[in-house]
Length: 128
Image 1 (cartoon, rainbow, N blue to C red):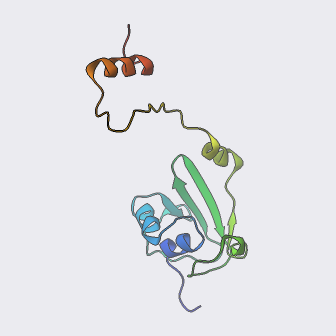
Image 2: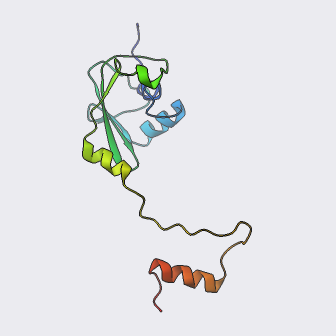
Image 3: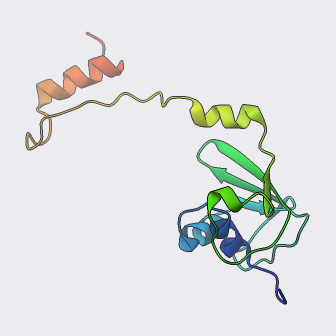
């Protein structure tokens, strides 16, 4: 391989992101760090580099073992990348969301004023 792969293409190839444009957007928004520096999408990746990717509350960490530019099957990733994410970070991904979701019948429209007050009481934003 004559040229080094771009960080956005590498993250897509090792299946961190579903699409290359998602990887590029993450780089542009500061969610990807390469060797403790913010990485632009065009930054080149070398073997031995450390990648940190923030997805939601979790900071995933990867060590680059080999280079690739084409997406490969997940079971064939071992020679290219090592996941060094600490267990406490992985536990954050397993943590259930603490938001309350309310279910409404389809087509019922926006809640009425009374329904809104009931929702607010349930959420603790309104006292009786």
